Amino acid sequence: MKILIIEDEYHTAKDLAKTLKVVSPDVEIVATIDSVEDAIDFLKEEPELDLIFADIQLGDGLSFEIFRKTKNTIPVIFCTAYNEYALEAFKNLGIDYILKPFTKNSVLKSLEKFENLRSRLSSNAHPSNNYEAIIEALTKTSGISKAKSVVVQTGDKITPIDANLIAFFFTENGITYAYTFEQKKIPVNQNLETLENSFKPTFFRANRQFLVNKKAVKDATHSFNRKIFINLTVPFNEQISVGKLKITAFMDWLSQA
Image 1 (cartoon, rainbow, N blue to C red):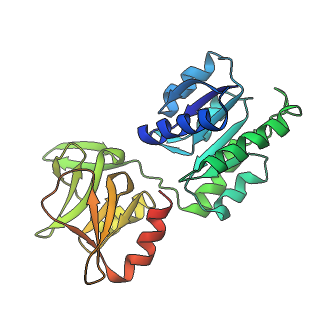
Image 2 (image 1 turned 45 degrees about the horizontal axis):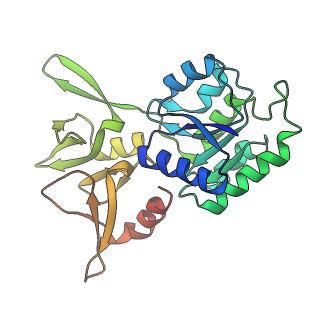
């Protein structure tokens, strides 16, 4: 079985490929692609594929755009952290999915479902052809971030910075800053409330001072006084604590990573 993986998280893509080989040794991973643009170019070449595993939200957009623009006829299994309520939008269109973090069992069940449907699938009758409706429904029901960049103004120069390059936003002495994965501290014009509304659910408001990108969270630690501290994937000289009233929401957000 020839499979394409579309996933922008390197370790997740690597883990998925390994899991696929474990549950189905005859699987061949044809390619692993990490962006909408590259996936469109790849599929336009009409490679020989049996199945696609695709994350929904990639760094440069939603993966549904890939299949809409290429008029894809290859069955797709989506890997996603969205809740089941949001997933109903395309579940009824016959698209299978596995929730992150996935397991060997969930991957195996998706492959089995594909095999059961395989004989009925054809290039002229793909069950997931209404990607515009899926995008609209997901945007309404699951709070997908519409904003992709934050605008930074320095003097007369206005520069957009991709949100995926930002580890977290924070305030210091009344000024809001973006702290990038390259450890650059950049002042931004928006306050944390505005940024939170623009970038949720990718970013989480840990407390009054910090808004954290899920990609920047290495893990979290319980302290003796029942506080939770976020351990980051980037070095920073201050610990980020989660407000007591936000702990439940944080755990829920983290569990869907």
